[in-house]
Length: 547
Image 1 (cartoon, rainbow, N blue to C red):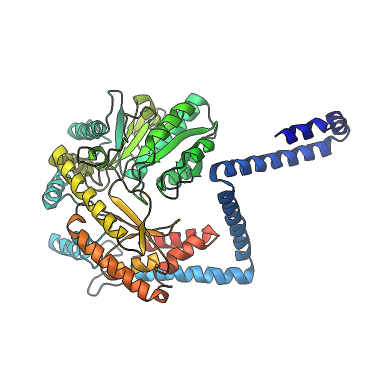
Image 2: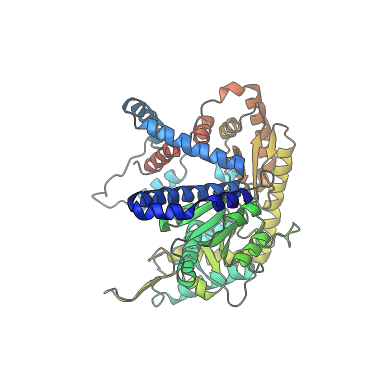
């Protein structure tokens, strides 16, 4: 710094000023160049401050190499070859999904004559049971957050009773309004709310997160006059934060996590905050590794910098509030942390409610107001809605209320004991397999694990798939995870036995796994041009709608 000041002091500023007066055009050009250079230098310094020099250089290399690949793709010959390979990958995805089922008709137009109830239900029954992962035997990671057959029967009855209701019309369905309000209050109570705290239901964790981001962006604009808001999130935060940033056109800065614990690097988070930051994010627990960030530290930073703080407890949901009572280490992830301004919690995960229900909570009503959309000049009347949707299905709300009422605190406490104990058992089993190691410090229901050479972790995934297991692939670092549910509890030993066999098989034949999952996820994690991966992902979504 002293050298910079000394250099600036030696500059003949008067001579520069005189030159600028006589050469205004060149002066403007020089000023523009200087401004551009200053902006780029500022960005570079900020990247180094957040990520460190080595990681910043890696990011720079990815950016540069990605640009080179994109440029090469535009060349007539090379681009055609690349596009042909992308098309082949997408075609393979479509073929794997859109397979004909022997004896099963396709219905691509509305039938000329209505079908009988018996025929309709028979078709639905067959399609429900088309071959796939045997999730009923606990072979799927997460996916089905099962509360038991008795509870499913109850929520189905509640669902049927409210099948045609719509909370958009509380005057027509006042009982549904009361049910929805009670769901929010019950969840608030679990998260140690004060009388000022409030919330709304949403369609799921993604919408809860999107609504919280919107609320803080509007708060930043109206209270702090921020026209270009940004949010600061750990790289392990749920992708819904990226979706919200893209939807609303706001900035997002991803900060690194500790390589050992997978918790957010607090020094990097502090360095990423600027005058336009409106929200910090912490998870309890993260989707990839089931790790809880240092929420107390983030709360303190949020207070220091006077910004919002959202805790994503969508996955932790009805597990984290019961950890201490269940005999595990407590993780405070609620409104007892003074810096917390919002929390998301999925009732349709470990709350065992029907899919399509979640709750987003706020410190006070004023913050919740920033989530709302209202318009008073529409010819159709005054329009107001709390979330993205207008009309919503009252059935899932009724099913959610029924599940929470049926489970009770004692039921959720027992499920917390059983499921977290299952995760610990699986974690300890993985730690006994020399070729594997646990990623991070799991605190809830998820355990992630990676492999040591020569064992390829994606090869292990394929071997587990051959044995009927559906595990979730991770990247950066390459790993797998299993999210334990009620259905996993009785099959933990079976899982560990199959996992050991899978590792042994991959270790014995390491060269047999260059295709399959390794070809997909290894490619995705190493290709510098991420737009190629995006194209393949878009092709995957297209395949979902191929009839």
